[in-house]
Image 1 (cartoon, rainbow, N blue to C red):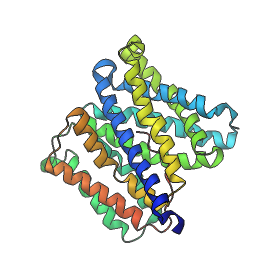
Image 2 (tube, helix red, strand yellow):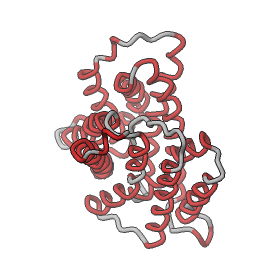
Image 3 (cartoon, one colour):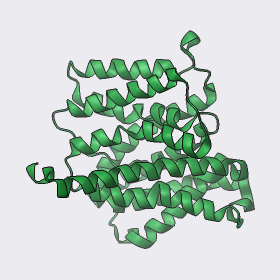
Image 4 (cartoon, rainbow, N blue to C red):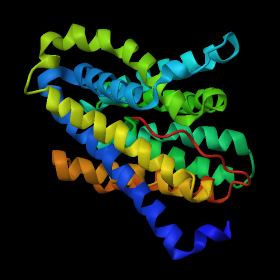
Length: 295
């Protein structure tokens, strides 16, 4: 623990984590700009398909030994990954990026709370519920968000929680990046029919492919590499706290790239979810590193 505290070893991995978060959320914002051209389904296909190709070239997943024992978690991980990405992008059609990330973030937060089950966790649960209550279309508490978009974000949240559980099981057998590579192939296989059915030949048009490659790089290749480097050099507690900044980074990216402005109440909701996540990580007894964010 002490070795990481020196400034020379602390600043670089934390800085890389922040760059990774900016990359992920910038990629989501760029993907949203693709929606008028190929729809959310097409953007998801480009992101998963191109990132899977990059992963195959780099990690050569055919070397992995797949058995009956580890095939189930690996298949489930890939299917959940594809569903998570697709439903998250479907939510982005009508929900601002920062709010969609805040809603989706409830998934890993729930997993962390369930695994801990201590009295202090009820405080963080209450904060997370408050944040959701301020976001979801619940009568007077409603912020005017599209119910369908919120529904997609909630499905993405469930998938993110399952992604963590299945990713840990699959990763224990194959290693982190090999699991991500195989999972990305499965996810691409799942979402590609939706993209082809919606966008067809537009997916390979010269106006779309460069943006699709940018989304794949920003949302997958770059942040995965940076997060893996940081995760091996800083305590998992610090890693978890940094990941809790995702909703704020998403809100900033949505504002700078897509011009999405949030109401004060929506900003308060994001702050509540972030504080709940930070509190959960900071008070946990045995925090574990989560698989990299892919949505």
